Length: 313
Image (cartoon, rainbow, N blue to C red; front, top):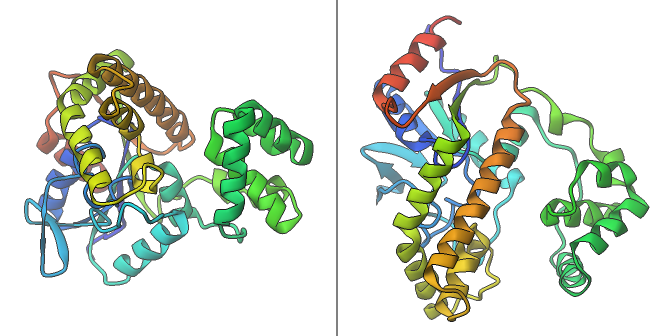
């Protein structure tokens, strides 16, 4: 019997996940599910590094492969881990081989390990917390969390404003600290019975160079996307334009940043994001790790190695 256990292609940004997932999908006659929280948005394919494809018969196709959860969500809408999990479950229920490709570890964790029953996001409360952070700073917001949920404050750095706000939100809506309500699923290992995980590993300096090269290549397109979104009536605060790099692109368009400085800031932020991704994926001990350098990256050869590894099970 054919083993259709899902395959996860994980790794930091700019590590080649899409190219390898496509090569693998062609060899296995598989569909790809994007596990990227930013590629869901319409009108932002360049800045989010979404795979270039076309809509055919209700499916987004990339090089003939069905590539799900890409280019479908309006910029002013939100998409979270529960929505991702529901969509992925509906797709897998159809049967067949699926490859999950992306660097949003929380999406993968939520889907394969389950989620806690936490209160849903509250837009008004989130705006209130955001205003506090803007007026008094991230450290002040983090201190608020430390008073009511010291354990969460210890685990969440002040700079991770989204997670700090979410922990405060959970307490305000439920009356209980997030650290009490969370069951541990957030930190659980993804069992190999549910998915076979592949991690694309790069030397930090080489990955930084790839990030810088990509940022230089996409910046003009990203700025054009941001400008077009505003011209369509989108707010600068639209969730889609909160994707990494668009804030700097908007500041460039307004004349507040010159192009070299904007590119440099985006590259720095992207490197920091890649570092957080590396830290996240270190939690999984049973990954198949593929090491690359710039000279030996070959998506087809990597796909063949993945198939050979999967055949062991």
